Amino acid sequence: MSTNFKPEDWISQAEAARLRGVSRQAIFKLIRSERLRSLEVGGHVLINREDVANFTPKKAGRPKSHG
Image 1 (spheres, one colour):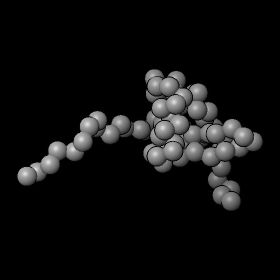
Image 2: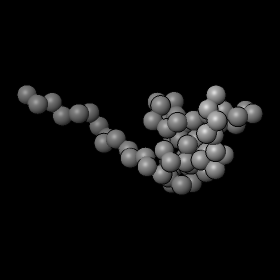
Image 3: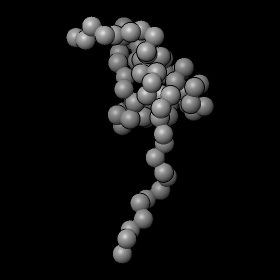
Image 4: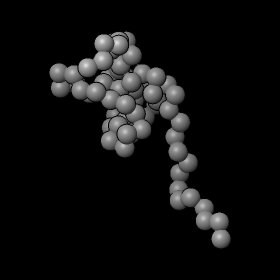
């Protein structure tokens, strides 16, 4: 286990949702798709604060074909 764990670097799903202006379900989907780092402590899921702050959404829709 890493000795560099800093509690201030991790926030709750609710706080992440507030910071991004999205629902907790949207944050959960980003965690599940591994677009945000998370960890579970005592039954609570925490999200990396830096990941939330630096998150950029992917463009919506299907990629355009070049043909």
